[in-house]
Amino acid sequence: MTFQQLQIGDYFRIPGMSDRCIYRKASSLHCNLNTLLQPIRAEIKVTPLTPAEITNYFALKQEFLQSLRQ
Image 1 (cartoon, helix red, strand yellow):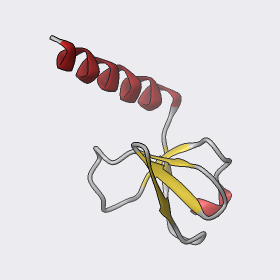
Image 2 (cartoon, rainbow, N blue to C red; image 1 turned 120 degrees about the vertical axis):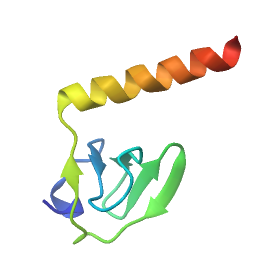
Image 3 (cartoon, rainbow, N blue to C red; image 1 turned 90 degrees about the vertical axis):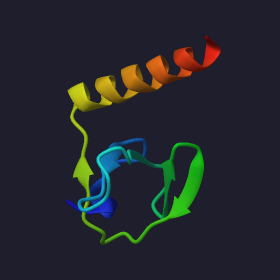
């Protein structure tokens, strides 16, 4: 699948990048990595996240944020 085929708001990974890098499609030309907006080519190959992977991503993020408060 390519970046262009994703819907805005979809979460994805880029093959060959760290599994810890989770991106979100912000527009037809940009994606978010955490809160940073980054340009991206429409034809780049991506791997969409499954609902279970998205749930796990947010659970880990929440756990990390809670660890910072302690």
